[in-house]
Amino acid sequence: MSYLLDLFSIAAIVAGAVFYLAGTVGLLRFPDAYNRLHALTKADNLGLVLVVIGLLPQVDGVLTGLKLLLVWLLVMLSSAAVAQLIARSVRRREKRP
Amino acid sequence: MITTIAVGVLVLLLLWLALWTVLARDAFLAVAGFVIYGLLLALVWVRLAGIDVALTEAAIGGGLTGALLLGAVGRLRRTEAETAAEDVGTATRALAAVLALGVTAALVLAVLMLPEPVPTLAPLVVPNMPATGVGNPITGVLLAFRALDTLLEAIVLVIALIGVWSFAGDRAWGGRPGPRYQAEPDGILAYLARVLPPLGIVIGIYLFWAGADHPGGKFQAATILAAMWMLVQMAGLDDAPRTDHRGLRAGIVVGPLAFIAVGALGLWKAGSFLGYPEGWAKPLILVIEIALLPTLVLVLALLMNGPPSRGGAR
Image (cartoon, rainbow over all chains, first blue to last red; front, side, top):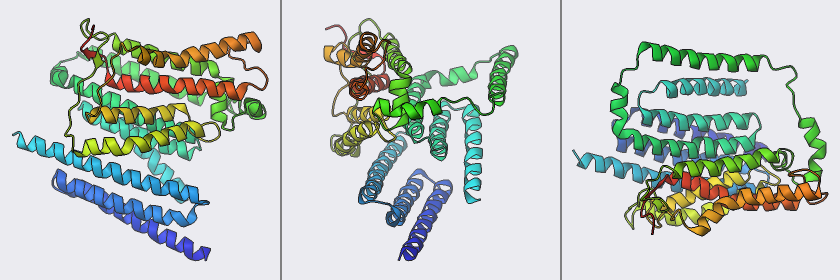
């Protein structure tokens, strides 16, 4: 059982790392700010949730697991909000030629 | 093996980033590099099992200092091109290079000349920890064995704030610092400033309370609480406080005053300044910690706010 759980953890964390990699490549390669934001936030959110799901079977208590979930929710909230703010400031700068 | 490679990559990245930050021509880019440098440095502290230091580095080194530096960049924007165009003579450049290299060489020599094994007081601290009543050795050192350093640190912060305030013009003295931030009342920033602070306050108090037995403590907690307050201000939900408000000023000095009072109590009851009477260490440490929290939150946030700039002298 623990063997299966370990396997599940490895698979989920590797999948998360792949999303992080994709997000970083997007950040470096995409042509403009909106596309870069899109690549960064989408891939990071998915990457983080996969890493958190992968870590959940490995924690030694419900409380630690809840803390991990809280970290995920907080990062989601802040990255979504910050992406909106950056996009808005980029658009404002475009309007002002 | 994999860990070694990961640490090697991390160290190389840190060195490269440090060099990049120093060489960056644009102040904003340099600050961005500095913030990332602070976050990576926090990872190094995690690797060295210094979780307390890692938390402080991420919160204060990367976060707060980064925000302060960004504020400075904003103020310097207007004069940046002018300064960059200014020609500093070859002699000045050479002098600066010699000074920088000299300091680096002195640091390298000092580190290389450290005796083996490195002198440490850890073996003295460990058997005496139970006397302090706290479980986290960092908190024990900061508030029992080296309490004087922490007291001076708190006083330095208050003096730094007085230094910032002294930049206020005569008309603004006692008024509110910084601009009155405006944001869309239904915008995402206002939303974040409504949703995040309740959570942030709980997390800050948790970090503060956990500091007795686990990594955490008043500094990390104060940074989070100050950040929540700044968020509320920047979203335009609340204005910065008047700097001549009596309650505000009392909150700023309560930490050092309580600390000094406990120190004087030690002089009377335990025979030395900042000494704790037998069995009273834990409650007295708690009193100091609780008194220092408002001081740190207010000073950190007001340092971010900057000097008073409007509506002085009622």
